Image 1 (cartoon, rainbow, N blue to C red):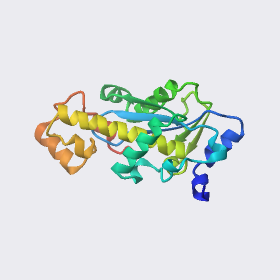
Image 2 (cartoon, rainbow, N blue to C red):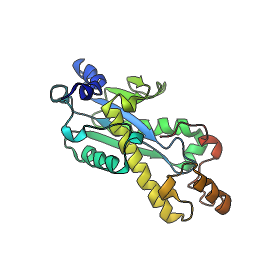
Image 3 (cartoon, rainbow, N blue to C red):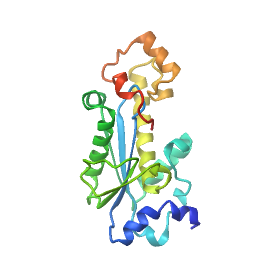
Length: 216
């Protein structure tokens, strides 16, 4: 496997070499939109990849925002169907987001996803800054979804899952364009809110909890 592919597996490899077999990458999607849930995913690659490297079907895996829709769907299928990859996905709904704010909701979703993994992750690679109250040993990586394959995999699962959820909401609440903009504050979305109002009470977050957050 080429050097660039090994590089994005270097954080996992270092931990595997320390005897930590269960290393999870975690990431979220949905901190930036004005509507919809926040979704997080956790992904654990097999430590045997320390010797074999990343499978060829996962080469090119990257931050979900850097991938096309078709690439995300393809990687999602490979990750979720691979017999040696463990994964978990969790979401936090709009009602909870408005109670605790979007960042806290994202962290809660990450924790919920991690808690689903069996066996429990021994170490977590987190995209961004350290999460102080996350009850797992962790390494925070700024732009981690571009530096760690397991974080990138979690990014893809979270993004694809949330996009599918927004497509379903588009069917429930036609006119807002959720299937197209996925709840982000695009001109189309803002115009729809102006025209239709925030009638879908269980769908919209409070604007103040979303504006200024990093999009995912």
